[in-house]
Image (cartoon, rainbow, N blue to C red; front, top):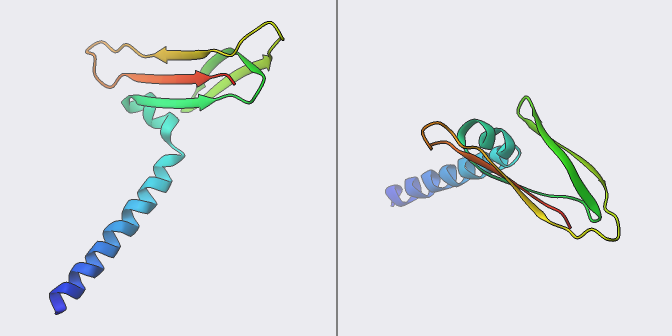
Length: 96
């Protein structure tokens, strides 16, 4: 009976640590993408047109402007191509 109780405590601790880790990493996706590869997706506000995107330290900055009535929303993909093909990052910016 004690072993079942111990497994329950261990499971609760594992779940709690997993939740805290997921919450912490949720705000770090840009930093993780830049340093270790992976994908970051950004959706711009309704009616914004992407002008430029750049990194400042580990933060991704976008420059936007109002979209004209003749322009349609597009999806931009920026890809890193590393020397050895590992830890490549991708940033997807979607206009709405």
